Image (cartoon, rainbow, N blue to C red; front, side, top):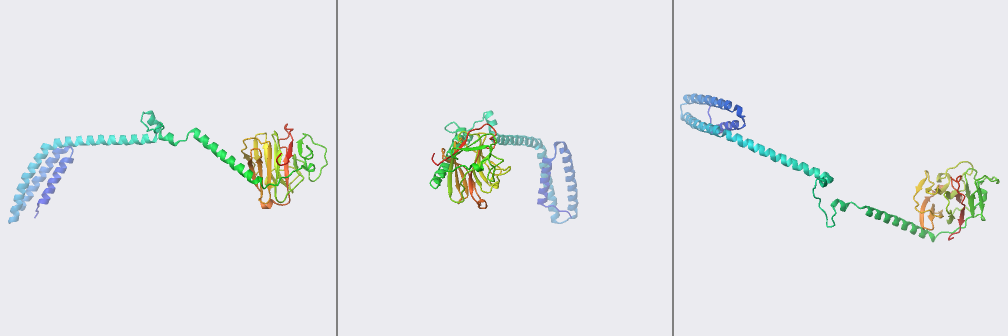
Length: 358
């Protein structure tokens, strides 16, 4: 037969209370009627079990039921009396909890937005901490325009000092050469004078003897001396000319027809174009940053080290250095001169070769 113990009875009471708490108010009466019907059915089943059971256990069940029935009626009455109060308290707690959640969410959103947009914080009047000098942390970290300019000047001065030291270090070991122009290599527009120390562009094709050494397409000219060993230094006075090209050329360069100035073709040359643009005639050409306009250019050829360097003797600094590959050290290197690729423009000033220290 069906028996019940105190644990099952307690579970029943708990279920009843849970149903009353979670059931909506509109269906509360319907639920209570269903519970009463269930309790009546439960009572009838238990009565039948009591009749069939004639021992002390059955009597105990009957007594338990009567006690439980009285407790159930008391609990039901208590639930009915306090149900409305419970619903009100629950609603109030829910509303308060919702308000708290909204406040916390709004505060978090505001904090994130303020941290991502400091300018908006300033517009809204939010205070940004300042140091003793009245600067914000951002202003402390960000360098001022004066600081940037000062740092740039320091870098420029450091570079200038480095170039001067490099110039002075090499000065001691240079072999000073007195270079002379070779008129037999000069383009027909060029005129050599001043005992082979100066050359100018006449602007017209002169009647000169053509030979295998003469350049016929570009206004180039070489020196009479060639070098294949040692260190050699010479200076060229370019004055105020706006166009010139200086350096060295290998003995085997092409002298007939058009040629491009670059190491691949046997020319290691630095150039000035239109009075403002300095170039290293690499492949392709490299624009140089020369702030002042030197009136003299010093050229150092170090064959053993495989370098050709250009200097500003007055500013005592290096302008540019070429590296000469071992495979290019064939034959002699001749000092190279040109009145510039734009010599067709009016630029009549000559260039003059100097002895070191002039």
